[in-house]
Amino acid sequence: MLTGFAGGGLELRKRASGALALQGRFPYGKRAVLSDGGRTGRPKKEVIAPRAFAYRVERPEEDIHLLVGHSFDKPLASRGAGTLDFVDGDEALTFTALITEEMQQVSYVRDILAGIAAGLTLGISPGFRLPPKRAVPQPEKIEDEGLDPENGAHNAIIRTVLAALLYEISIVTRPAYDEAQVEARSWQPDASKTGGFDVGLHRPLNRWRA
Image: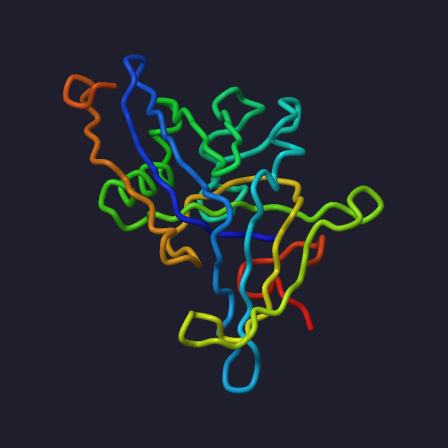
């Protein structure tokens, strides 16, 4: 599964039921530097186009998970369980997840909530696959950036993801974009104080193939 990164916001609020409402935002149209090219290669950058995830997001029957670090062994919420909602727009994909009281007792959930509160785990990263070309003839576009260092162009290869199948979105420690450092507002468990290029499986550092 491919993974991408982008900046946005992450907010935790306590609800009267005891559940935590976790809200996040994945903005579209931002460039991520996946590789600086090393000594002899060319840099590689990636852009997620607006509404690139629309196919599965717009179908409520398609289950999508919120995970810790792209691990399906560490779920936080899911649409199938009725604890994850999405709103898709031209500028960003936003989500709201309910972390139930029962899930708050699980050790890895306590760890990720503590990391968010401490400002240490602040990245949002979607996990997706490119659709088969028989369904979407051009799910991605590859371009040359050109060379103009004064204006930030370093002859990179730029991949724009035009259409992708979103299966999960994860909370991660280190996103690829500088602006992917999400903002986590302080929270307190006491509600009275808070107000309530491939279709195979890949990770960020090896999704480009020669």
